[in-house]
Length: 137
Image (tube, rainbow, N blue to C red):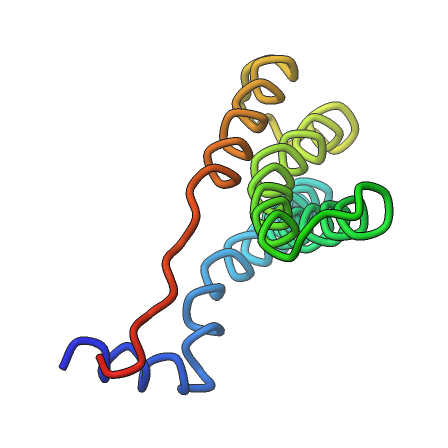
């Protein structure tokens, strides 16, 4: 029953918009408050979450297929690890840039600490292999 619920939830077209609405509306509210550069900086920071997933996965896929010529299983694992690395590290780079140039004042640790934890997260995603769902469930 729970699986049917999540399958129906996946088919809905409006659910992604509801989930991303706060990330879009908060920077727009800041922009209308008179601080355009801060709003644009926060919008860039939140957008970099999704861009990091896409770019990290694409980069890892290209490296595993064309440079390392690995198997399909290793390619899937490297792609998952690349997505995790991009999700964890690209927003830090964008946040660091927006702090310096747009005055967003996003609090962060050092880039080295974020890089270390992005590598750890990517390693965890590489090592954890999801099981294939059973067809009858």
